[in-house]
Length: 184
Image (cartoon, rainbow, N blue to C red):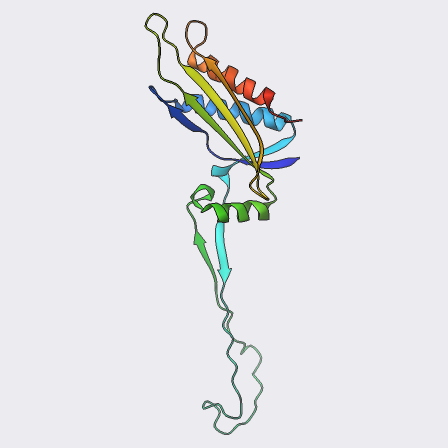
């Protein structure tokens, strides 16, 4: 099963904007089809990442010439008198999508994710007086994480209007984009 991370659906509209329900429907249909094709899809919003690092400082002291040891005597440490480890430092980030692209890529590579899925909705301007209609376009892009290259891209559009509501047009465009993609 190939793991993918799906970034949030984007919407570009000339006229009335996409509704959250339309975005959710396109997101759900896309993920269901990809999971049926054998991909494991994870939403980018659900990725939990925390940057952690450790800082260590090493100091060498010559026991003979050290000002803290004027006699130059070498002594053993009593049991339990070990130097403290410096604390591990961590920083909560704003989530995966808030990371810079190079950190996103490093995080995904380390997590074993193979691709990034992005879906965009584009709704054209309303046209026509008697039968108002507009274009509904779905574009699906898959890029490889290891080199950032385009794995596949598919785009379809359907006209709304007399026979298609916006919701039906988005559903048909989503199906078209998925069917024309090389998933198998």
